[in-house]
Image (tube, rainbow, N blue to C red; front, side, top):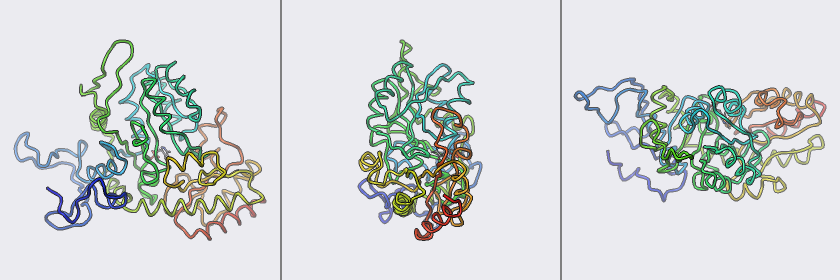
Length: 413
Ligand SMILES: *Cc1c(COP(=O)(O)O)cnc(C)c1O
């Protein structure tokens, strides 16, 4: 159905206008202003092989999921988006589409623990080769790609939990010169703060569990594909890679595998994730402003040895973040004297809740070495012992500052 004039959006509209409107028009029958929740697993057919609106069975396509995917693709500036039941299922499906046994992946040494496990434990058992690289050293990334014939480079920026910022445009050039695709995990920035595809990345992944959903009430993931992206040719003369579909188009390959293995987000979770997009801009502005205020406060606290937040003028990632991000986001970390103190700080807050995850209305605190980053213990790129990570929520910032101050004192920091 053609969009009604009141609600049609165009590419010239700003982020928030598109976030509120793209992906659905008022229901023609009822006038619903929000997309309805379609929970049907199967759809009546008008004749054998005559589908109504293209819908057949919920594992293949669902109208609620389609609406969310259309909105996310638009907001990331991509050609297509696909919604998965978790961030990890999105990542796993993407890696299966882009690699075959024996292929190589270069991944940032500071990536999410689950991603690290995917590349160091899970997929190597099926023949994938993977090498951790420091994405700050773009020349080293290019050398690693060329030496190993990497199919893809995988980075996360800002990184977790050290909030390092990496140069997406330079990494995209390095990956492309070596014949690889660049995947950026945009979970920490969200599509409001950063557009990796516009800076040369080929694919974006999200844990929509975090900022996109924004309310700690769903698990979800997504892949966004650059318009027209094709599988890179395989070196060594085997020529173009047509994949399973024979088209060589990454979006089609992803759709095929997602449906084939059943890695689809439920309509209820897709509906919640779509609702999250509508408030993403205002939430990210507030998360970023409060995180900056906390970072500035902690920087001047005598018990704090270091603060990691690119919004701080003296942070090593500040200038790059100012170039490639709209603001610095809601996650920051800081270091106290030692691991025992950091643990006590994490256990001493009352407004911040002790929990893994991030990106929601509720402020969360955690001790990465044994919580989110336990998988990296003992590795070269293990996180510092005295580190505490904060996900700054939407509470009043004065209450958050007072809570952290009281926790530092209670912990004897
Ligand atoms: C949480 C997270 C993931 C994994 O997503 P799930 O939804 O938990 O499967 C991947 N990347 C980053 C940066 C994350 O924070």
